[in-house]
Amino acid sequence: MQIDEETPEALEWQKFLCYPFSGRARNFFENANIKTVGQLAAMSKRELLRYRGVGRKMLLEIKVALANHGPTPGGGTPAFSSAGTSDGVSKAKEIEELLEAQTKLEAQLRAVKEKIVEARASMPRKPKLKPAVFARWLEIRDYHAVAKEFSLTSSKVSSIVSEAFRQRLKSKGLNEAEIVNRWREARSYQQVAREFDVPEFLVRNIVVRLNKRA
Image 1 (cartoon, rainbow, N blue to C red):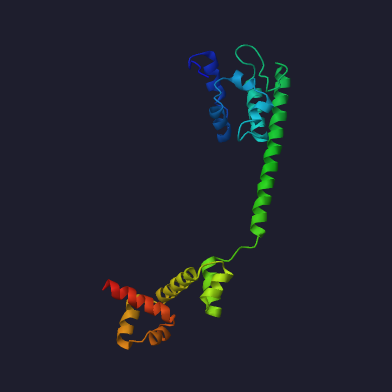
Image 2 (image 1 turned 90 degrees about the vertical axis):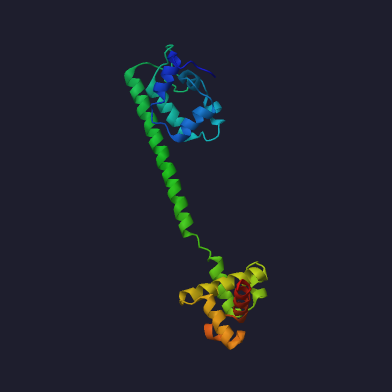
C-alpha cells in the first residue's frame, strides 16, 4: 500500500508511531505493510492474530495506542479500538482499563518467565563430557569400555584422554619437548611414561610427532 508522505493519513501515521511501541509491534506494522491508522484500526482481532508474533500482549498494546490516538482525520472512530464515544471521560476510562489489562498481562508473563528460570535452575546439570570421560578412563583404563558407556568411538576417547594429560603436563609447568629429551636419554617409553605420570601411548605419540617435525 503506497501512501504519499505529505497526505493527512501519512502525517497521522507518523504521529501515531510516536507511541512507545515495542520492537515486535513495529516489525508487525512493517511486515503487514500498514501505512495508516485507519488501515490498522479496520483490522479485526482475527486478522491481526494471523500474523506471526501477534499475541494478547500486542493486541492490548495496539488497542491502547488506538484508544489514546482517538478518531481518524475522516471523523470515524478506529474500529479495533472499540471506542464507542468521543466523550473525554469515557475515553480516559477506556484507556485506564486497557492499561490495567496490559499491566496484568505483563505481570503474568513475568511470572511465567520466573517459573521457567526456576525450573531450569532446579534441573540436574549433566557433567561435562570430557572431564567425565577422562575420570572414567582413569578408573578402568579401557578405551573400548569407556567409549561404549559414553556412546563415543575409541579414537575419540583416546583423543580426550591425551588432551587431558597434556593439560596436566602444562599445569605442572612441563612441555612435550621435555618428554622427548628425556626419551632420547632413556630410550624407553615405559620409563618416561612412569616418570612423567602419563600413559605410555602418549609418550610414544609425542615422540613420533615431534621427531617428524625435526
